[in-house]
Amino acid sequence: MSIVRLDKVTFVGLTEDRERLLEDLQELGCLHIESFAAESESQNVPSTSAVAREALQFLKACPQRRRQNTDTSRFDALEVERKVLDVRQRLQALSDERDFLLKRIRDMRPWGDFEFSPLPEMGGLRLWFYAIPHRDMMLIKDLRLVHEIVKKDNRYVYVVIISENEPEGMPVNRTHIGNRPRHELESRLEEVELAIEDVQSERAYLTRWYTLLRDNVAILEDKAALAAAQNQTYSRAGMFALRGWAPHPRLEELESYARRQGVHLDVQEAQSDDSPPTYLDNPPWLAAGEDLVNFYMTPGYRTWDPSQIVFISFALFFAMILADAGYALLLGALLLSFWRKMGASPGGRRYRPLCLAIVVFSLLYGMLIGSYFGLTPADGTFLASFHLVDMSDSNLMMEISVFIGCIHVIMAASLDAARHKNRVEGLASVGWASIVAGGLAFLLSTAFAPDVLKPLSVLLAGVGALLVLLFSAPFDKPVPRLLMGLLGLTKLSGAFGDVLSYLRLFALGLASGSLAAEFNHMAAGIHDAMPGIGLFFALLVLFLGHAVNLLLGLASAVIHGLRLNVIEFFNWGLKEEGLLFKPFRRTER
Image (cartoon, rainbow, N blue to C red; front, side, top):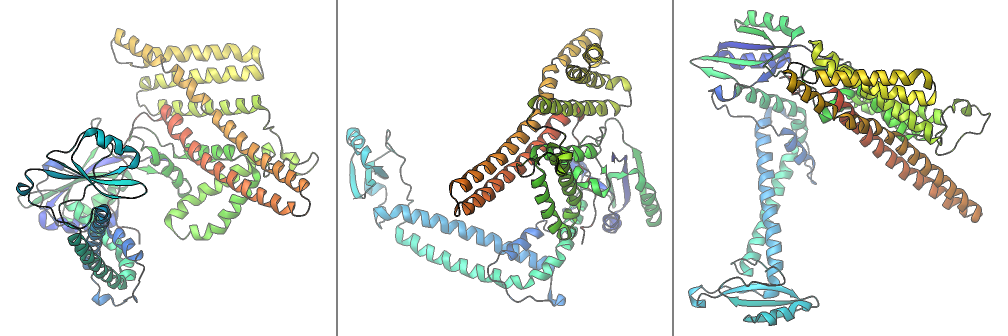
């Protein structure tokens, strides 16, 4: 749950040992390679295709699949990949040409099949073709152009205008028919159609290698990554250098490898002018929270890791927007049915904990507000004992939403302040946390203890404003420092707006609950008005209504749950964006 310390490492050795070193480093999988860029004078090593999965998908989508060949002795992954990509490129080019020919022939059909005379024979005059709506024909007569009506249908008049230059003031754009007669285009179309059939046959033939290619796609990607890494090294006079970033806990392993292989390894700590990538280290249950963070931005190397907070807050916001225990039970049943299937893939295993947290939070929150598919349990029942929050109390729900917003922003500003080694640099963030805390204290004073908390809220806001004023630019000269402080205080309205943005939690939750209750009311009305057959229509309204409401709730929960984290929260907690640490390693088999 932190950003791992990285050290800059540089390997130097003989060029003949470069490929072996890269293969071993790829096996270790702990180095983020940094290119020497313009310094590089390495050979232009032919790069293995990096689109192996695209080739695999192209074969998978083929409607005609041949019997699979399992003889590995006759299988060359690189050659098959090259052929598949060549077939895909040719098929795409032929398909594009066919579409062009079909459109051009369709555009030419009203004008007939003819050949253009050479321009000198036409006396420098050209033919311009227009499909003009009937209502606009009067405009053509007013322009007094030399023209000929070739054909009419129920929508258009097909007109040829004779002129040296393209006519101006025409009501429609001209029809482009090219300079080739229609019979040539139709002949070429026939050739293209036959060529497409031939290419499709080649594609179908190559599908016999689909299984072996699928099993070897990771090998192709590894070779592509290895070739790319070779092009990022520096080579001169029989020597090479490879530079990158490695996690500090793995340095001993790299140093041991360098000693065994007789390769020089230089290690340096990250300097203030360096821009190391960001390596987020989290336990497996937080992996999805890390993905939520990187979905919007990668934290800077010298910032902090918000994965844990984003994981919990996203699940909480999701629950507050969904706002129904019945819907949570449906999601729980769906998750249970896919639990084992999700565990079969790395991506599924990453997101199972987040999905489980969402279901648990949604169920607990739905029970607290007493909503089960829009129904409230009757007093005295077991479920009613968990109903502690009245969703219809707008003042209370708005206070809860603002309270959560204040806590979220305070945590963001506080953690941003804590990341600075020089505490003076973080005092401005402490000031913003104090200002928002003052606002929170004032909110609590209006509901609980006005005599105690109001003076505290004024004190916190005043101290916070003073810290922002004095430490927004702590190392500048007095006048610029004061001006930067005043400029910093202009963010006060932004802080107010960001906190109020959390009211969407209440608004969207109320909308979801209101829709659910209204669908229940509609179904009950239909059932009462139409005895017998009304039961069918009532159940239909219930099913369709709650299905739509659930889909809307899920969409809102994902979009706004993410938004509150990556916009409002990151705005106060993450001031620097970084580069994601991408280890040079073998693809997981």
